[in-house]
Length: 273
Image (cartoon, rainbow, N blue to C red):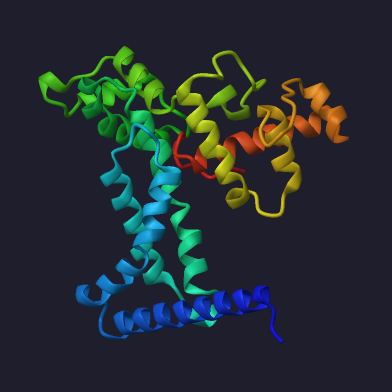
């Protein structure tokens, strides 16, 4: 005789398999029929609860709900486009992995709320000039060089000073706690709402960025006092606690900080070594 727990487990498994079959059937119709909008609609509808949950779970307070939902749906459609059933990964798993990319948008655009409205229009030309000059000079350009480059083609009312460039760049890349391990972390001001939001985002990204790297997770938890770990900001104390040398801890901090900043959209998208 089957006990209630076994019956429940079997029912849940049957439900999961039914959904899996349904979503694959919908995806196949959409893919085989030329990816028509009317075939995409039932797929999007199937994932509506998932998207709604992610909006509640991940959206930063300064991001409009409609904007973040649209970003999630963009990644959802891209996941449908890139899905390959021959790889042996379920569609739902493939979608979940892809949706994590929306966190980068969340972090990056959250920062823009801290830029005065009059300076928002300067972001694009400044970033464009910086990228062009970096290629030409083989190094990061100075604020004055960026201003001069922008001013060559800018209208009189759009001309920039080096000071304006500096202010906008600083706002775009406003640091997460402790410059995200760029120096001694756990610095003052770590209890601000902004830093708490960024820290939560970084914590959620850890398994995605550093899969199967428990030492990186351990370092993060000790550095910021998350997941029940005591906060330890000293490199020498961390070295003792983790059984590493101070130079190893420093390298791990640098690697983690650079990767997290890049993944969260807080630095230009350069390849890290």
